[in-house]
Length: 223
Ligand code: TMP
Image (cartoon, rainbow, N blue to C red; front, side, top):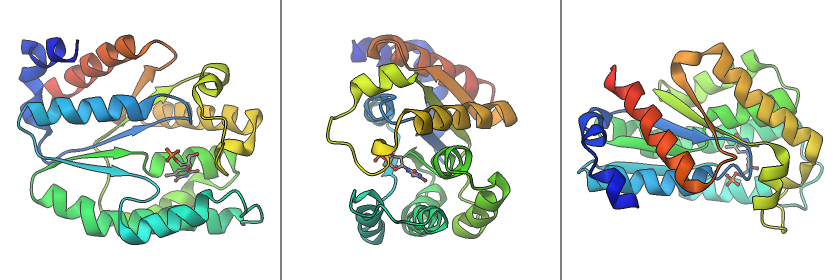
C-alpha cells in the first residue's frame, strides 16, 4: 500500500519542495501521529530527501536527560513554570544542536511535537499565557520556526483506546485535561490557519495517510 502512494505522480510533484523546510507533526496523546511520522519520513527518503527526524522532549543527549525528569511519574510536585521551561530547555538544545544546522544544510526537518505541544499542554490545558510561552520560545528557538504544523485531531475516547495502559506523568493527567489539550491544538489552527493543517485522526491508518499526503501536497504545491 505504501509503495502505491510513493509512486503516484502527484506525490513526486511536490516532494522536491521539501528540502530546507521544517514540518511538525503534533496532536494529543493517542492521536497516532508517530505512526504517520515514521511513514512520512520513509516516503521522503524514498524520494531522495535527506531527513532530519527529531522527537520531543529529547532528541539530544541533554534533552533525553530532561525528558526523564519531565515524564517520571514520581515528579508529581513539579511546578507548571518549571515544567514549561524544561520542555523549552530541551527544545533550545535540539534547535541549536540539530534543527538549525540541518536547515542550513538544506535538509527536511521533521519534528514529532514542538512548541505547539507546549502551547496546548502547558498553555491551554495547564493555564499559562500563550504570549508568555511564545516569549520563552523566542529566546529558545532563535528563528527555528516550523513552516507548517500538522495537527492530528482525535477525540478522548478514540485516543484513550490507543494508549499503553502504563501511562507516563503527562498521559495520566485525566480526561478533562486532555480535552483541553485537544481544544488547545484546534485553537492554534484557528489563530494561524496558513501554518496549520488539521487532520481527522479518528479514522484508520490508511485513511489518515491518504488525507495527510493529499493535504501536504496541496499545501506545498502552492509554495
Ligand atoms: P510523547 O509521548 O509524544 O513522547 O510526548 C511526551 C509527553 O509530553 C506527552 O504527553 C506530551 C507532553 N509534552 C508537553 O506537555 N509539552 C511539550 O512541550 C512537549 C514537547 C510534550
